[in-house]
Length: 200
Length: 250
Image 1 (cartoon, each protein chain N blue to C red):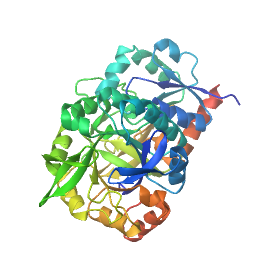
Image 2 (cartoon, rainbow over the protein chains, first blue to last red; image 1 turned 45 degrees about the vertical axis):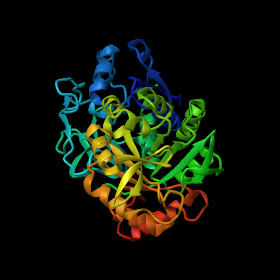
Image 3 (tube, chains in turn brown, green; image 1 turned 180 degrees about the vertical axis):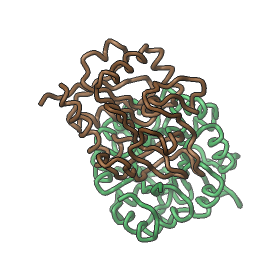
Image 4 (cartoon, chains in turn purple, brown; image 1 turned 90 degrees about the vertical axis):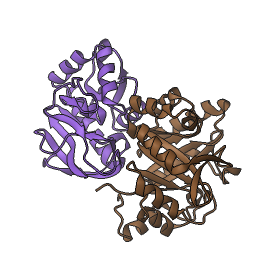
């Protein structure tokens, strides 16, 4: 089996190095993407995010990557959104009022209703879908999609239950950081890379 | 439910782990990558790397250490020391930090907290405060903990929170490196008033004192020399905290 080429969006305020390290450990060949041309030839797409979503949306549009990313997701290419990258996949966010998300997942990202924010640390991912595994994952965020979202496959409890993973066809999004979530996160990245390998 | 965290801290200078008492008399405590991997294996919930030399010349070495540590672990990494401006934060993030701690630069220019938070998100910005007891309260200590500042420490923490810091790393200078237990009064005071997570540091001695700090309201408790010298293990501390009824990651 060939090593899948995984495009990692590098929008200027993300921990691209860490997610790339995680993808290499999982058996993939990640490369940073800053322009539409660099997206060509990818077998899979990762949208990471240690960033303010407003900044991420601006950076996406400034790099003219919105349409290419939407086309890549529509093509059926395995795609993974992480943290702010997951939030970017929804229609909009309280963190970026007025700005338009990618809109590939239904719903809106809101401020978590919890006494302590941001939600920083390890928490349980509780699966809703039988083919999605649960476990301990590392979170670092203040915003999330409330439970009840149509594409939710896992929930986590912090003040309220929010969507910690969502899936629509080839797109998986996670609110936690698989690259920083020990063995549980490593298994998730391996699954993703395996899915990408089938296509190359 | 969110788990309480046990955090291992590596103070680094010139590419090595160092440890001193109250930031003085630094001595060598090993290779950062080897230490990081060991703590990760033993169940640390997070690593903190602090560049304690923090001079302009040392910045390259610190970035290199951070990159090597980040690559070697699969748990979150917080980095601090010598952060002067937003570009320093960006450089640490690019090197593999998940969160970056700001300390004296934020005190000199509090707007730095907002600028970092707007760009990277509050969850990424840790306000590191060195506190020392002065009279009935706590003041900020500057210059590596040797000089008391006029500013009240809690007041500064609340301002930092309002400006967009997403976590407070609170070090008791009176206890740092002394292994006399965490300052529980200090922890209670801050935990009661803050709405961002609180990481307690300074004075870690054994498993029971970590549980005490967490029960006093800290969201995470940090140890350095107590782990370097093998006084206790991460696994032992976590098992004890779990037996004390705390939610701890397995």
